[in-house]
Amino acid sequence: MTKSEINKFRDILEAKAAELSEVVRNRDGIVIEKSPDALDEVQHAAERELAIRNLDRESKLLAQVRGALRRIEDGAFGVCLHCEEDISPKRLNAVPWTPYCISCQEQADRNQEMGVEDLEEMLVTAA
Image (tube, rainbow, N blue to C red; front, side):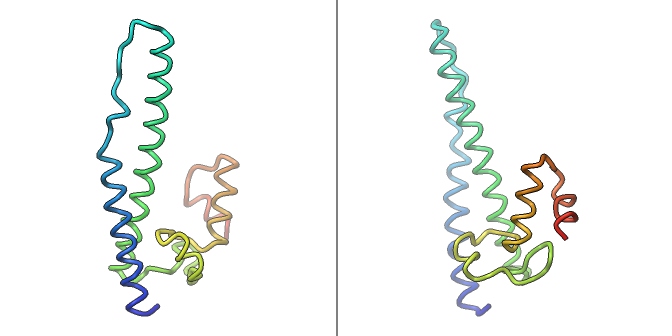
């Protein structure tokens, strides 16, 4: 991968990290509100649950983006963390923070659907 391509991905990842950091800092949707009306309580609880799920998803994505930035600094960006093969440029353009090639990611997704929680266990079965 050329230096200009690495710099392009670094810029994309830094912008995404800044965007996600702002979203993660904004936790206003999680506030517990009391209401005299039971239906309002249920509505507030549902909104709070949605905000928590979104915050969790964005936090995980931020961790992936920061991991990709570390891999750029370490010189390992664009190499699958599992099989150590190059990640296709098409995949990196679509998901620049991805740590896995498409084959390893598909296997990890299948294992996750089956309820395998441990990432190492997922990837061992992928090999």
